[in-house]
Amino acid sequence: MNSPVIGIAGLTKGFGRKSVLEGVDLDIVTGERVALVGANGAGKTTLVRCLLGEYAHGGSALIGGASAREQRREVLSRVGFVPQTPPPLPHPVGVLIGFAASICRCEPRDIQAVATRLGMDARDVWRQPFVKLSGGQKQKLLIAIALGRQTEVQIMDEPAANLDPDARRVFFELLAERSEGQTMLLSSHRLDEVSGLVNRVVEIDSGRVSLDSPLADAVSLSTLLSCELRLRRNERTIALTLENWGLRDQGDGLYFKGRIAGPDRLRFMGMLSRYSGLVANLVLREEPGQEDGG
Image 1 (tube, rainbow, N blue to C red):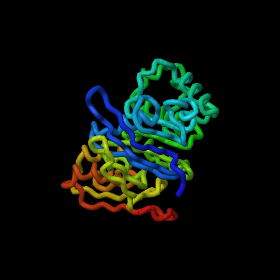
Image 2: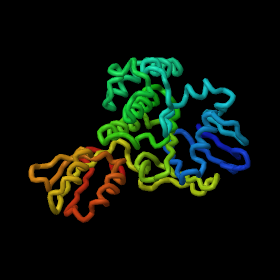
Image 3: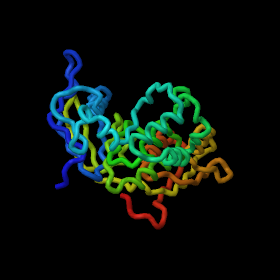
Image 4: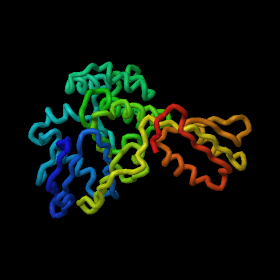
């Protein structure tokens, strides 16, 4: 068996009298894409922060055999990280991109290129403080910094939750391009948000691992589904929602066509469930020429 890229053994952490992590054991090997799920307060964020060296803790939490607590710069140079809540950084966008590039010895233009693919021109906000960006811009920039560098490990906390459908589709494409040989840990309190991105699920409950299972229905990150949907009646609310997902009205307000990223299919179906009484027919087909993603 491959040596783990992420190795967590007997990890404990508490705050005052409150115990948050109670002996977590978890190994993640090269190429695994792991969803770390659990209710709010289960200990997911605390685990990630211990792994990144932000908290002192009991037990061990290693990346590539090294502790970020003791070898912070070395470890973080090998990790791309997207936090759930963007930090209130006062630094200009250009300074952040330059600093991130220097950590991993890459070119700032590599980060800019990823931002451009996500629909954000970093040059337009080059001198603007990060804290002044919109929520979507912050998310795109953080993802660009994480994916624009050559790192072995990606650790992300609900990275695509605030992205529009077009940007989400590009995000999945970017992950697919980097998935070979790269290890990913994606934290979320909702499995449906990340199920299409991962091949293994680990659930944290009350500070312990309560479930660790491969995901049988893993989908290729590059899969695209053609979508045809017919409504029972013309309804502006659902029409706007479908347009935001990239589906186009074919002329009568009842028939829509477009493409859905395969990893987003559960989110898409969840959205449609709110309008189940309006949906007359739905067809999702994997586009020709793609490998079967399940």
